[in-house]
Length: 498
Image (cartoon, rainbow, N blue to C red; front, side, top):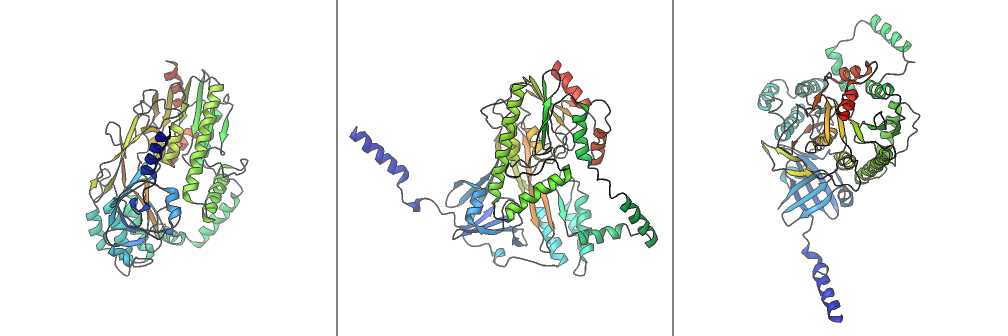
């Protein structure tokens, strides 16, 4: 026994008593594959930069609290999945980010651009970012070279902020991608809008402002919130439970069929407690104010995102318990009003209803004209799952990580889709900022289903189609106008009955 203990001790030391220097240092200069990001790590501090072929700026990524901070903040968000002398892989949620070590600091970043109002420089940085990183130029028929040549004739050092905003905004709007955003201060937006719609005569504008003031007392109508509520009004027999106001609503329909209206893939943190009696808009404004306030006060993004997943896990357990007690045999998950959120939250929720581990999809990034090889993602295992059939309701407003939820069910025949094709915007949003302070975002990732299909732009098709308008207002209005029943829920009941 003594000899056996000694052998164990020697084995333990071989694994654990090596000198610390055998672990490669994370310190150094790192260039991310794709994404246009350069990372410097030195003395327990990181600096992250956004780079194009012509520029280097402090990072605007929403994935980190600040472009430079303590290394603890970065490693609180990302796990070091692997590292060697020459490579580093950071993992968050379902995504792995690969970095290659540089032997010297990136020369572009020796003099980063902190601020510049130069219209040509600002346009060139935005153009280079899209030209290098935007994954869907071909799908959406965008010719960046032609757009560059066109704007070379339009933009010069005398171009005003309002003119530059118009040129960029019109160029990006024409692409028609819901993951492309572009934001400037309200003063510039309003000045631009005034150039498109010049204000009418003084007399008329006074009249219109007087009539607007008369209607100020009426609460503004939020079509999305009204549509979400309409479904539960049509099926009054459902004794509804809810979480965080109207983020998730659930109850029982007839025929032992359960119903879940899942209206977002973020907003789940149990640490955020807002008065549920507030109307929809003030409730969610207060919710996000509290979140951003906590982050400003020092909560890391890593902690916030862990709170989100923990909240989703609690909701999942509550749902499974409720439907078990109610003896639900089958289930409808309504994702028609769900614009997305966080992939990890979507996967956590899905794990309660997906009864086996499947290859879900492949995730690649696009950079400078080619795709990376891609990382395979599987549906997550779960200790307890709903055993019955599941119908998923979709619309053109089912977007982003809500689409990833749907994509992850396509290999599992217990799921059936009813509705209209999803929005067709899968990529995580790559966030960037211009030197003049304006911010923008784009899609640089490609999701392919387990059998190699890419549903960007076209959306994921349903098994049974319900025709909805594709535009935001038209879709929600079509739901608000329903009178006695919801065709999608009726079709789901029919399919489950058969």
